[in-house]
Length: 234
Image (tube, rainbow, N blue to C red; front, side, top):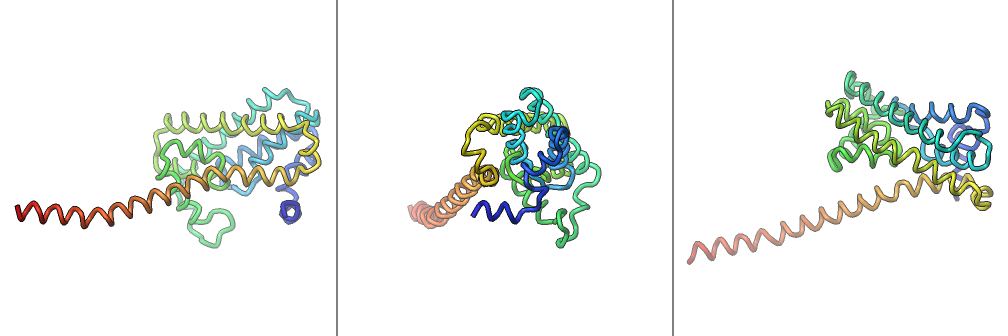
């Protein structure tokens, strides 16, 4: 199933193909992709899987760059991408998201991101790093909502430090595992799926809490009414 999904993806969404195509410019091309995906209005890029592949390629020696330097540069690219998205949102608001039939700038993306931000507050800037599409638009929402710049920079920096080096180091750690070499496409797609698991779990828990609160309110109302009636009678 996963190899079939990989075959259906355009070639520029395949991190291995993209890095091989970039050749000696692989790291610099990755920095550009990370920068764009983290805030410049183009969310359909292989951010998570590309970071993983960079770590793997460094472990193989295909990308001849020190791991620490790659992690630093990728963190900076992720941070600057978010800052760009913040100021796009601050100056343009959400005026670009008006066409429901648009390919990328759909109004529903902004609505979903607003809900995400409302639920998690400032820490959403960290959590959103691991959620495709939301990762791009949450910075625009933060800017449009005039979030305090210092607070934004702090939380988005924390997110960049966790996300970019974290996934790159994971790829590097697994870079010498033969099974990963033999099933790289499947591993990359699985990585994207796994990155969505925490959000899916949080969503299910939130629904469960909402249902529990609704049930408590439903059963609590008659009890309250009965107590009030008894107090009045006494």
